[in-house]
Image 1: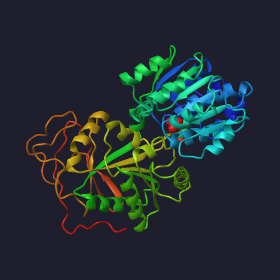
Image 2: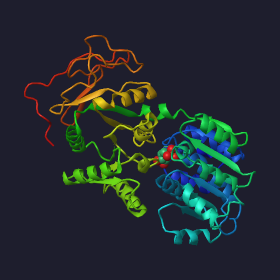
Image 3: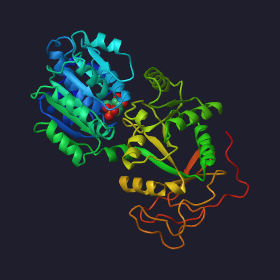
Image 4: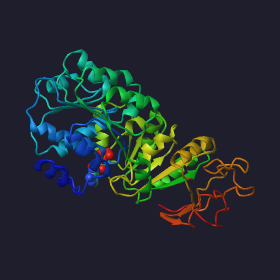
Length: 444
Ligand code: AMP
């Protein structure tokens, strides 16, 4: 299918061609005709599926047909859970709408009100924003949603996770009942489905198997680590690999993100931190530096990196495993985007085993273990009693031994990864791998 068959304006088609897109992604092919026909949408799709263009292209088409609304009263509102995602939606709007004469405003928390009052003070087509600040403007009457035609809720499940349910409902109730509503979520549990039921009218249900789409293009590995120092040595080793052209390193806390970025910089890596305590200006600059290659290793927390849309992320490194299995998929979805392949590496210590098992169950596959010569763990991840398969079965007696890997495990020598025999998912733990006599860590 081509974009031409989707009945989009020539100006929009030109912008899409400028972005280098040759054909619509599955969510675009399914959603665009329905949105153009005015239907509500309930879509389960993750970042990386092309969901932003799926809602933005038909919405821009609608905006280009009629003149813009009165002061402070946008015709389209996109609500996003984080500032980064809002900034990316805005950038996408700019790219896709570059040949249209449209006016948009970005309303984010943590940024000065003065520019927002200025932007909202004139006629407007589209507003993108985060819930808290949008509510502020609604209460101050600088934002008027009475003329809203299309409401888009992006990453609605994340919005719930972050405690924005009431804010979301307030914004929805300030919009006219006959608006069109497009709701995008990565997961659809009962709470989400109830909320969607209240916000949407006879929605078209679109389900993009994001998990498979994302994971197929991503090679996943894990490194067993003994302690923090061991983790840092492995990170430094990986960071020294020239194949790591642009990476996101996930850390559990903001403080650790700062500390790791400082340590990596001191070791000569172009690293920077990204987390929610940084002023918005600094966050924007850091993301820009990553895009433009001035930063090669971004050390980030989950919230800050959520929705981050930077092309060409070669590696995602989970320095700390995420708490929720879903976040693992969100994190590794930063790489392997838009047809590219990517590598996701997770550091796992013994205390992480329950979390690892949740992740492996969630993605329905075991993560193969990699070993770096000279940086092997001193203890296996699981003792003989606790070795388990992904589906919860115990390993055969005698299979898990000190230093044991699993079929399909890799071992790295220098910067080359060598794949061993193909992994059989039913046979989780088999061979023992010991360090070759005299083997040394690869030089960098
Ligand atoms: P999203 O899921 O909206 O975050 O988009 C993921 C990435 O896919 C972004 O980098 C987009 O620029 C890119 N993208 C969106 N639509 C297409 C398409 N039809 N062809 C190729 N890349 C696309």
